[in-house]
Image 1 (cartoon, rainbow, N blue to C red):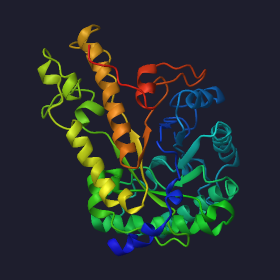
Image 2 (image 1 turned 90 degrees about the vertical axis):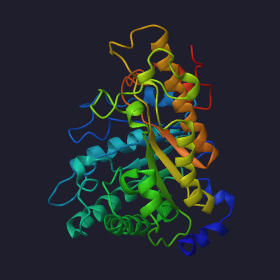
Image 3 (image 1 turned 180 degrees about the vertical axis):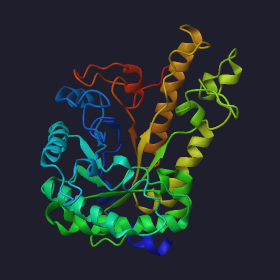
Image 4 (image 1 turned 30 degrees about the vertical axis):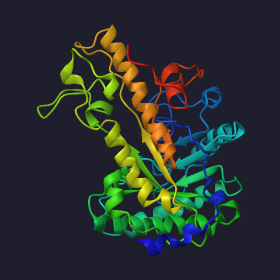
Length: 365
């Protein structure tokens, strides 16, 4: 693997500044990526929302997109109305001097959930067609805009990773062939399942790129699952309400995180630092997020609920700060009703906005 990355070690430091340092990133989640169209998973995006995101301290926005769901399946042509809508939202971001990542999100799984058991020429043709159209639409945009080929490709082996890499080669070739700013645009490649351990194990080569040093890797972070995503207890374990050694409850002992806390987080991120960022290959933490616990009988309003809320800010700050300290670029996963009102742009959760933009966590009650 060392030989594959040697050329990147010769790049000047400025060549690696494809995103701000530090990066305070935010996701326009559940908005432009629903296969059933914008507005079906929450309110449409608004210019007021984007302006508020920028004013709140974020300097980068990830915009999940859904291209196949808005394409003619016979001609593989993307609906110009949808393309124009994505462009409008990108323009709102650029006007606020935000860096922007646009991807192909789950999109009914045509690529992410394709199985990757073998190389499929029909899937490859879609990669070629869609990214040629996207690249041509944005070919005159500067380096503040990045392209990402997938979201979370479902990969569980080296062999499947090798198939994914063939599609990535098509993605790189298609974008570069359009010329203009796309000749040097940063391109982002999601690791296997965007899982840190799988990426560390199987993502050992990158596509050939005529422009050296313009490929980045993406992973996501939702650990421990019981704290970040789990919404009901299971026979194998309970939900965690509290994360971080200083935020443990003295009364709800079975709700304290029993694994995956500060040391685990640092060790996971250090894998990406050792494998990629220390060798000049940027890494995006494209998503990280911990669920807000509302409506649980054993967590009514009061001190322990306040402890949970404070713990959540500490998790988000810990992930953002640790990532930035290792050259990893974090993007908080947000959806309508989370940190912002999607229609007005009003800030709904100032504590977590501060925690994910370089500010403090809320101390334990």
